[in-house]
Image (cartoon, rainbow, N blue to C red; front, side):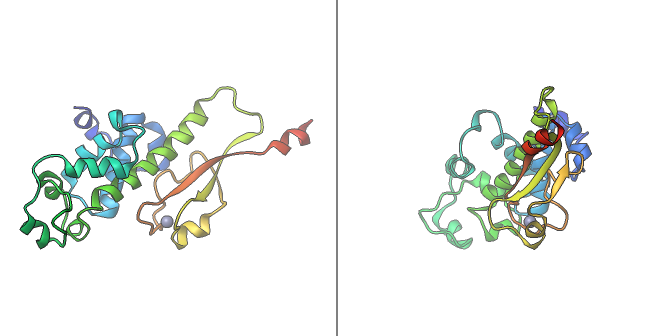
Length: 202
Ligand SMILES: [Zn+2]
């Protein structure tokens, strides 16, 4: 399986330079690991499932729909077992999904997979933005390989203070910065194109 192949060469926490040296599958695993480690809602052995949910046949579906379908799939906890972790009788959670919850994740049994998948999805999206721009041989002449940090939703104080900051690709926080306290870290790295620069050079 692909995850096994990558295990030995993707450390649990990586720098931007390391991220940019990975291919798409490698980054999928790195983003998965970062999200599991940082949030602590799932056990480490759940990385196979988050890696799988991040790609391939699930592409194009919203993480919310993906995680709901995942929790519904397979034998469900009994009503008593659900009540023991604070869930209503009609909530969906399979035995497998339940077994992947950490002690902390047991406090958010129906959100643990979703929050982890969202955080990993945003990191992977930022990686793809930067890598796709770097691969372009004929980018706009006014593109100086700079990316603007743009929070999308509910930024923590660290992300608020970074809002609007420009980063070169090798310093751009593809994974959430260390001081970030966001849960899902929903921010973008938007390629910055200064169209007026062409006028200056003309
Ligand atoms: Zn943050």
